[in-house]
Image (cartoon, rainbow, N blue to C red; front, side, top):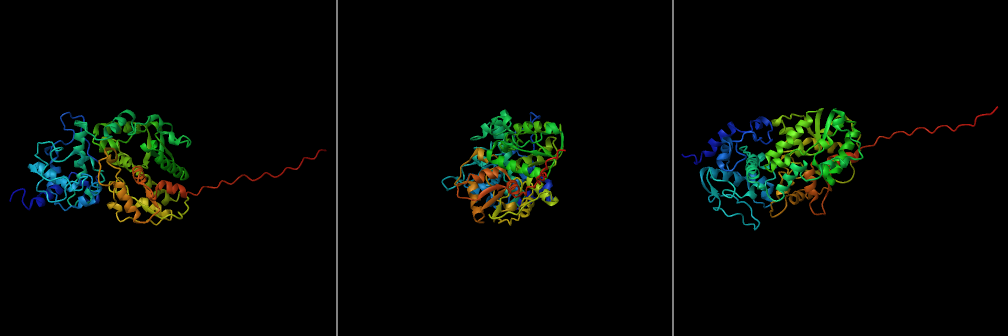
Length: 473
């Protein structure tokens, strides 16, 4: 029996699981943060150029693939007809390590715009040959939304997203080959600390009339409200203002960083620019080290994930919460006076970076139940929720397919006949609101809670008794 024999998957699978690169996943734990590159080691490779550059336990994971197709069935990019099939990608890495072509691949090819799929037998390689334009085309790697649906479904616990980001790192850091608007976004992050290239001095314009406390003045607070780059987006500003209203109604002791806040680095890291990510992260960590707070709360699951799970490797360890989790705590403590939601039926869309990445499915639904909302669940919800298409820099690289991922998600939504979609992510809001009307209304959970707040009635002072004219003697 050779290594390519019928027992290969059994042996490779056992070894892969025994030395899994994310041992924390066993026993119900979660490990979803990307592994950092050591940028101080000038001899270390910047990402993965060829199959031999993967770590040994990643290579074992590729050989452990049993080709069940569960990752393929879950992949939003594949369903949308973009040129990515996670099952074939893993098998291409197996072919590359052994040497050869993909001619014998028996599954679905990478989708193509003509609907026929990319021809088999035209791609090949060996352990020491560059992967891109040999084994796979670059657009395959840039189609991924990093939603982790493939990883969640894989019975062998293969880490597809880690491999894709490793290959993107090489393309970005070594080749400067980030497609479409990618290069401009990365330049903006370097020059202005935000992906849109907006003047940093406008970061707090959305709150000009809210009289928010600055952490630079307060120094110590219970909650640091991490605003995120939604501060520059007019639609997301409504969410931010709604959440501030909730915080004030609950009398939370909070402050913001204001102009000291920078982009969390999420987009840069997913686009493969580890250097810009680490630069932004170190700056934020240095800023946060000046102050005292018990926790960070943010409306953005992407910032939440990076601050909670990826800053730690760079020296920034914090208690971080998504705003839905924090609002669920406020509801449990009875610090919010809420009326009951009336009228429109509601469904809830699980953000990938809140759900699959961080296991938070219940808190948003708990908040909605507190408003008297019975959620009309989509068929694909919870850990099987379909991605909106907004993660991993996908709207920036913008690889075309037969259809748009957010249109597919809106079809899921329409099947519930709900009139309102509750969301908990600015990217999800942007992607779903980008679907052509007629469609349901998109509202962040913070907006629904803010709408339901019962304002305290401050009794007006009693009318002073009418004075009688003084007698003159």
